[in-house]
Image (tube, rainbow, N blue to C red):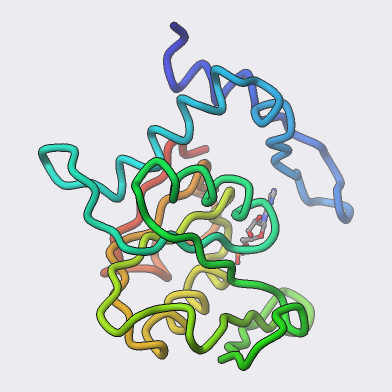
Length: 179
Ligand code: AMP
């Protein structure tokens, strides 16, 4: 079996100047198409939602639109937990809470259903890439507004040249690989 590191190296490719000049986009579609590798990655992400004995300790797994959905849903199943989508504004049909955060140019807003969590639910957040940390930070605010408890955040890949980890100081953040 390949190491997790090898799986991530094989499965995440750099697409320069996408979606705009100067950005190197981390494309995870080769990883998603690799059944064995995808399974190893889901297992590694799910470990962030277990205790020292490997027992699941989360009630809900949140996926952040859109690539976070693809990773979080199998993680939720692996942990025996529910899946909750956090979506861009205007996509969720029932009553929502929303949080906005600054982008390099302008602002973004994400939402969650107000009844997505039971009070005190323990939550693991999943996304593909941690860049500036603004998205995860807003997502954690949403979860806490719902009265749920954030146990941690797990991402496939962290961009260490951006201030994501610093911004999320005090939060439990796991990255499977840091570049
Ligand atoms: P941020 O809020 O800056 O941490 O950005 C995180 C969100 O933007 C995640 O949902 C990522 O999917 C996406 N993202 C940011 N930078 C990249 C990148 N270089 N490659 C792929 N996705 C990215």
